[in-house]
Image (cartoon, rainbow, N blue to C red; front, side):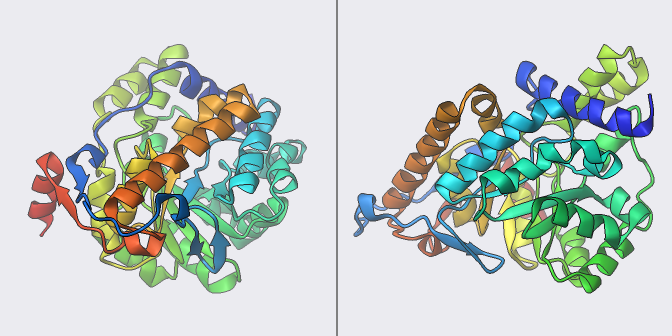
Length: 353
């Protein structure tokens, strides 16, 4: 099997495993966060305004439909549904890694459908930091052009690469490649972790490199160590399977990562174990500009447009109720909402302080 064929086959493996297996691991920290209840909200729940601005774009919701899939013909319909939902609800959306389509142009349609179905939505293209280093700014520009994107996310997935049998394990030079990209392109550059979180030290390096936003991708949601361990087990890769099991608990919990990164700059997207509108409200109260969600939307997206719309509508109902009970009439107001932080999350934050 050629390398491009391996890439597209891997995309279908990931989608299948995420839909069929238990692939979550760890604690994001959201269960340790409690929003201070406002007994006198002084606002009207039916008039709660969830609109926000992100990288110069006006959005109807702080929900970011996080990168999930693409790069195989069988993933096209899922991307269609996700894009239609983004357009309908006024959400931002990110596509999965476009490496497969950059290597094989016959797969472009699995990504291009997103802009076709979401003509006015904020869309983020997506390539890996290793691919950026290897292919340069041209690949990033091609990825953006492929889907008419408004920004590009450069994903950092080195835990996944360390366990993946065919993984790229050379991370040298990626920061320089990011800095070069930021200096040469006119579109915003987002750096996206994929489940291990971003520390304050890494965040400072990224802001200094010129990035426009950071998606923290914290530990406590979808575990790529578990996913790649399952893939290794299926292909009889015993050593890689064991390595996946060894690193199930590796990473910075989402809430801890959010608190560290928010103090270094912004905008910040909170992803990693965001599972409800209440979690989105907590992330906003802790300083996030937006909150990303993938796995909770995957099953309904694979089922039907109606199932996906129902899931997102419920998330927004949860968010509005949480905002109302916090006394926050707008997303901006959520920045002033107080929180209590307990448990292991509090312990980790105190050690950081």
